Every structure is written in C-alpha cells, then in structure tokens.
Image 1 (cartoon, chains in turn orange, green):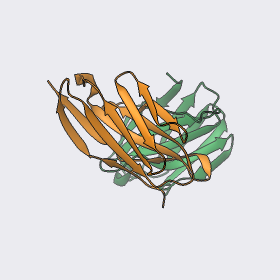
Image 2 (cartoon, helix red, strand yellow; image 1 turned 135 degrees about the horizontal axis):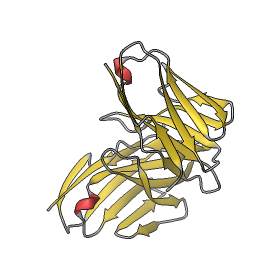
Image 3 (cartoon, chains in turn cyan, yellow; image 1 turned 120 degrees about the horizontal axis):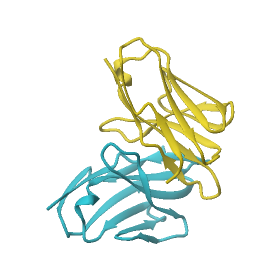
Length: 113
Length: 112
C-alpha cells in the first residue's frame, strides 16, 4: 500500500533553534517528493521538490534531503523564525500515474519567542 | 503564485441543501483536483480531472460529484450536504513537465 508517514506530529521549538522533520514513504514506483508549508487558514505552498536522483535541495533556511534507497526524507529548518510556525506536509508522487499524489498528515511546528 | 481562485471561501449551510464549490485557474493546466482536509487526516482526494469532461473518483468521493466543462473551471457539488462534509476543501492544479502541484486558498464549508 502506498503510504506517507511523517514525524513528529507536532513540535515546539524556540526561535533561533534548528529542527528536523521526517518523512517516510512506501510509494512505488517513485516519481518525486515535495515538502509544502501550510500556514493556518491558507493553502499549502511548495518549499522543495526532489526527484529520484537528487539527495538534497535548499530553499533559503529550508533544506530537504532524500534517501531513495531507504525511502526517507527530512526537512531541516535552520535558525527558526516565528513565521516558520505552520504545518509542513510531505507529498510523494508516483505509483503508475505521476499525477497521483500521496500526502502525509503533516507536522505542526510552533516556534516560540 | 499560481492563478487559482476558489469560491466561496467560506460557506455555512444546512443539512440536506445542495452546495457547489468552484475552482478557477488561469494556468491552463490539464489536471485539476479537489481535496478535503480534516484534523488528524492528510489531504484526501475527492475527485480529479485530467481534461475537459474527463473526471475520475478519488478515495473519498461518496456524496460528491464534479464537472469540468472548460479547462479553467472545476466544480465540486454536494447534492445533499451532511454534517460529515464539514471540512476545508482545497482545489489543486498540476501540469507541465515538472508535475508541480499548486493549491488554492481553500473553501471552508460548515454544514449545520
């Protein structure tokens, strides 16, 4: 069964600290993996997208890694800011239709001053 | 930002009434999707479209129907709304070689 699991479900960190969010998937065949940020009351916005051949991709203070062998990805946030408080969703596309997407339940991050 | 507009953004209705949510895109993308998002669940696919008049069911399609008469518009209809359909509904579009997936801002539906 194609699944995407994220951990932790929620996380509280102090402003300025780093954190890492995890995503494990069982989607096969694999096409690509994306991380989205969803602010409260808004739609998800893409942070990064990685294909099978990419191990790491950065977007400002956000760095995503992908290990296609172990089917694991992580999103590392450096020097967190209050505006990083949001839900982060891991999305994997694949199966036999690259326009089919599998969603994790998200990690809710709360950055406190 | 991708050109996706959802309407209405907020709606309160009563059980048994019909409801239609509209998604409008200006990107000319082939694929359009309707998802619902509920606490404790990830985004769940209701229906999707892969072209004008071409639609298919997702994992939670019961009680919902869709139509796509033009590339830019994808309508989601609840024929007879129930309280279990209280949710936030997101439209998304996808297309092009990267398969990028863009979301609208969501429509919050409350069924009393």
